[in-house]
Each structure stands twice: as structure tokens, then as C-alpha cells.
Image (cartoon, rainbow, N blue to C red; front, side, top):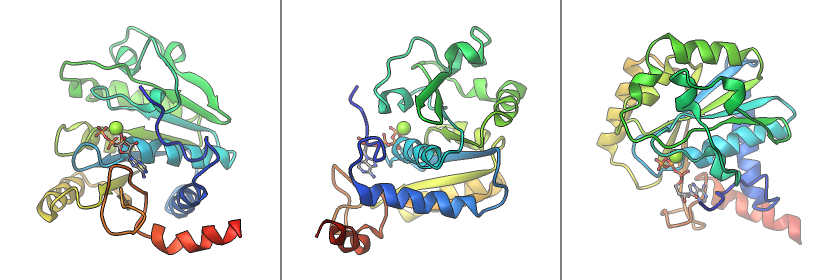
Length: 236
Ligand SMILES: Nc1ncnc2c1ncn2[C@@H]1O[C@H](COP(=O)(O)OP(=O)(O)OP(=O)(O)O)[C@@H](O)[C@H]1O
Ligand SMILES: [Mg+2]
């Protein structure tokens, strides 16, 4: 699988990296600042959860804090491939007790960044997240990291993100521009509200350079167009 858009890693798309730095700062000033667990989710597939989760994790790791990215999307795992890594074991085996965390965790994927990857599993895996096991794993890991980012499946498809939101401190809600209806968003918001989660922010993603509609290759923030001139100015 092709490597995804890690804007920090490739040293390009400076405007994208800067937008993630702004996101990092905004979240930093919300609530607790250490040992935080942030859940990244969206309404439907393909809105950019994995892209946002890995870039947010990178933005904090670059700022010298110790970060763990956990791929909790066991049906569509992406975290390891985002960083061009092949894996033999995953989160599912840790949850089922077949493997220990230390046997699965990928240390130092980037400076200050570890990844707990997932290997694809077909069966219904929501049960794996229920109960004390996942909660206990997270509480243990929390002590070792300044930030843990959970990449999760979409809210409308499976219940995993809502379960995981109960173990985390807050949710980053990704919204692919023009991809979901107002009704779907309202439904997702109701789900998050009834689960009592803290909403750290809504990220409007997949906006093209003109800032109006999403294309095959989207961009991270509706502010992109406004910032474009600023960054072009750097090159002059
Ligand atoms: N801001 C962005 N800039 C460029 N490409 C993006 C951006 N966000 C997402 N994409 C691209 O859109 C596609 C879907 O993104 P991604 O895999 O992050 O979504 P997802 O919500 O995690 O999807 P899934 O629900 O399937 O897990 C990918 O090909 C990704 O590279
Ligand atoms: Mg994903």
C-alpha cells in the first residue's frame, strides 16, 4: 500500500504542516496537557481520519513530546502503511491476549513517535474494545506518553469510536467537505453528545485549492485558500 500524506515527513506542503501545528496548539490549550488521549473519528468512511490522526501525531512528536499513534481501525488499518512499514502483528492480538504490547508496538517510527498498529481482521471486532482490557491497556500506556492518538472507524458504520471515546479525553471530529449531509452530521453529533464526549474540534477536510469543493486530492482546512498567499510569499 502506498504511503499516505505525512506532511511533516516529506518536508513539503509547508502550509499543511503549519495547519497541523495550529491544530496542535489549539488542542494543547484545552483541558489537561499531559498524558492526553485523543480520539479521531468522522461520520462516514474516507473523510480523512487516518490522515488527520497521523499528521496530528507527527505535529506533536516534532514538538518533542512523546507520542503514540494507535490504529483502532482493525477493519481498515492504515497507520503503519502511512509510514511505509510492514507489520506481522497488531492491536487485535494484544486485545485477545495472544501478544504483549511490547511485542507489537513499533518504537521510534519517527523521532518521539511510536505506533501500535493493527492488522486487518474481518470478524466483528467491536467486542474487543468493550470491557476492561482496552481501558486498562490505555491507562497503562498513558503513563508512558505525553499524547496518545486513536485512529478509529466512522461513527455511522460501527460503534467502536463511541466505545473508545469513553476511554479518551476528547474527540477530533473530521468532516470531509461536501461528503456528508446535514442530517448525518446531526446524527453523529447526537451520538457524540449522548456518549458525553468532549469535542476538541471539527476539522473540515478535503477542500481543494480553490477552497470550495473536495476533489480526489483534498486539503485539510477551509482556511487553506486564505493562507496560500502567505506561504507563497515565503518563496519570493
Ligand atoms: N488533507 C488531505 N490532503 C490530501 N489527501 C487527503 C487528505 N485527507 C485525506 N486525503 C486522502 O483521502 C483518502 C482518504 O483519507 P483517509 O484514509 O485518511 O480517510 P479515512 O477517514 O481514514 O478513511 P477510512 O474511513 O477508509 O479509514 C486517502 O487517499 C488520503 O490520502
Ligand atoms: Mg482510516
